[in-house]
Image 1 (tube, chains in turn orange, yellow):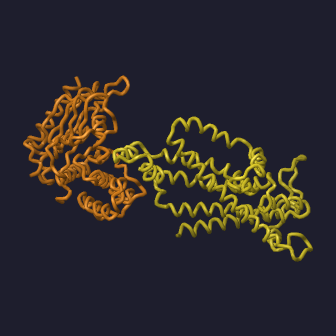
Image 2: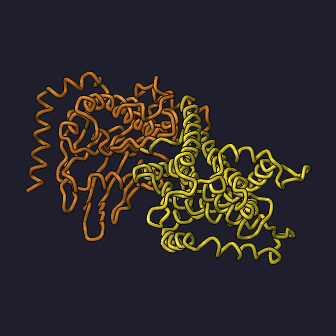
Image 3: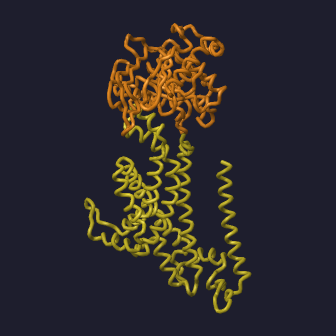
Length: 269
Length: 289
């Protein structure tokens, strides 16, 4: 799996400086300052309308900021998108029904004219990573919701991005599948070495996954607080996926959940 | 494969049922039909109005002109002209298909074009075919494309395509605009351009909408070709044959029915072509996520 790990660089994975985003009269984002280090896992949390999805979309260059600068891996966001420096996964897996599971994973490479043999090899490697090697030839419709979402994550990782953007990817899954997927995601993120920017409205999910939880409030959408997640001291590399279950029962986990909840409540007044 | 066999069996049974119904009506309803208070509520069923099915079948084997031995049979004449019309209808379908998809692409690419063009595309279908046919036929003698003089059969093909392009333009536009925002944004995030998005996302996603549109267009092309042959007076096709046989219908309707049977079979063959297309594109037929 070492070839999956992207090269570390001194540059930060994401750097937002004074970012505003205006939709007509509505100030969706105001004065956003946020930096993600390489390999760091950061969650965005807040009530609906707080601009957390908009923030992710600005990083993805799917929306243009009204003011401020967005740098991804030291490049302007647009250049990063054109260079496929990030992978993205949405709440809906968005798999193409007419492609097999492997062909869906290959899509980003296919779009960029990578040769067939290389695509096949890369897809096989990624399906192995997300534990779906046996389903390479299946159709998306034959897979469960959780499996489809894992295919979408594999697809996002296909161009070997240094950054993974995820917009409530587990929002449509049941609680049990969701918890299993969280453990899977932590393992995948660690093995691929990618930084992750993760949008969610679940406090436990944000805490269990993240190095840092960024709390946002609406009208205008801004960052009010940054809370340390369940991995104080950045010991992500030592954490085994099996430990995720145990994490949920630690005092540190409950303390972080409480801190996030209070930050959200404060912002709501 | 089981589905295909079943569909053949169903089609054959439906035909048998139709024949049975026809003969039953002939048997039960009196020759003069049923008249209640001076109004005929059921049609005449005598042999001059409703020939027996076997009379029509037998007619296929008889010579076209009674008494002349060396002339072709009715069956051969019907088959020959149906094949000719089929060629024109399929040509019209291809022409209309290309035109329809191009129009849909232009409307997809430029929203302004959709607002500007769609009303005219809809309006084009309300203009009666028989009004347009003489105009197109009039191109003969006026148009020569790179040294090639306009032929009457080309008019028929153009008129068939005029009916065929409409369902394809509307169906293709709906299908091409079908993918949801998340799918389109996925392609944007992959830095895929408009053409790549078209080829890898929109076209495959449009297949389930385009196939039924092509089915409608194929039927429209057949009707268009037959009507065009009649209204432009083009020789060689089933439309002209129907007109010729209709003139003898008062004395012997079975010959006309034989030609109508030919036209119906023609429609079935055109539908079969679409089914082949459908089968070739099976992997794109699922719903789009």
